[in-house]
Length: 299
Picture 1: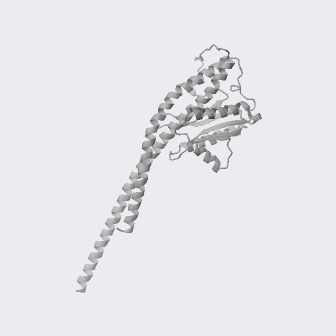
Picture 2: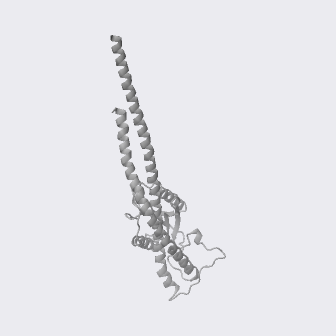
Picture 3: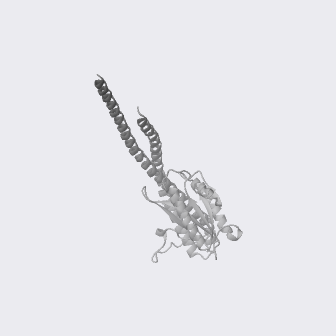
């Protein structure tokens, strides 16, 4: 076997090994994304319902709750950036980080200092590499988030918001995450979580549509005290689930593309190896014919 042929054979073996890895990761992502989609479908109605309920209570009650009050001259804005723990998911995390940079610039132009809160090792690595400070980071769960993690994040963000910028907290909270629409389409979204507002376009009531009317017992203040922490946690939990489904869908597409590219490379290397072998055979035949001719001439 000639040198060129050996090189192409070695490259083919390397590509074949890589193809096995990408194919396995594609299958794993495909099996997990269906469960992630189910969790999104199961939790989204509750997140929308509690958002609507809390908005209605806040709208029709005469109570000024700390989580619903707009701060005068807000100085600090918290930004929760939801990325993945692992790579090999195409531009999934890069798109979120790009959008977070745009949000940061917008908030800074409006005179706010941005305080980052991070989920996923990709976001943490991005900030550490650029030597940027961040308030808190949560990692190790991005492809399968739990309600307990969402509550931990929600409790921290709520506490910092209630403290306000004057006491070392923040005056508003924004979330940057990827919304799962279907297996082909996932879109990066920016929503303001606190102070409370209706953040989904489809949830915004039209002029003709009225919020449900509620009777408060014991009173609207205690109702809001009970509802608002659940609202914050449910919104964060749904965002984490949306992001997890989006991450798995992006990884499935990226690994399928890598597997398809590996197949094309294998075809190319096989063809080049065959061409190299044919060239070697042609060269050997030419040398034999040349040697025979030289012997005939010598006689």
